[in-house]
Image 1 (cartoon, rainbow, N blue to C red):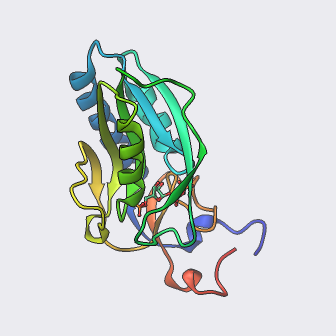
Image 2 (cartoon, rainbow, N blue to C red):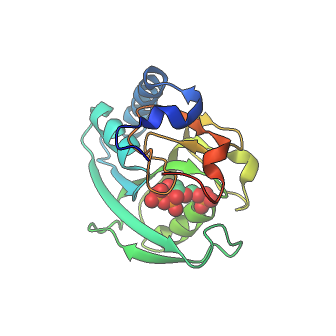
Length: 190
Ligand code: PRP
């Protein structure tokens, strides 16, 4: 790989450009402002993918709120049907009696969000909802996973950018696009 190669060259199609993403983030923030006025919600971001979305959402949100982060790792293959995961980093804040908004970049199988919902609910928050930028509904395995706030529904394609990675790259793209197929092959990417 050339050090000067642009990551943009690896994208075959842009699904949501920067303007569309920022517009949708502002709309979601407006919904949250209405729903959480006076409640000082805690936005919980899942490392690492949600960092870009969460920081833009937080900046757009003009009501008092806090942010915190969690990190988990899957046992074995990430999409193993068990959804078994290991907690790598827990919240710094107590969430009992707090209004918690779990912020995700994408809900795919839904196993991650289902696991986190169970984990956080056990701590008796005043409320707990999921806010995801992308919903890849067609791949859902977890049953009955309510998504209170959704930015966009996405088709079953390999999307990167705005937090979403392929082998830890492409997160910094300001848009969401589909990675060129040949890069997904084993000999693949950078
Ligand atoms: C992604 C994303 C969600 C999860 C969704 O995280 O940020 O947390 O996958 O997938 P699921 O609905 O099938 O469980 P990933 O494990 O890729 O880590 P990352 O956030 O560091 O990119």
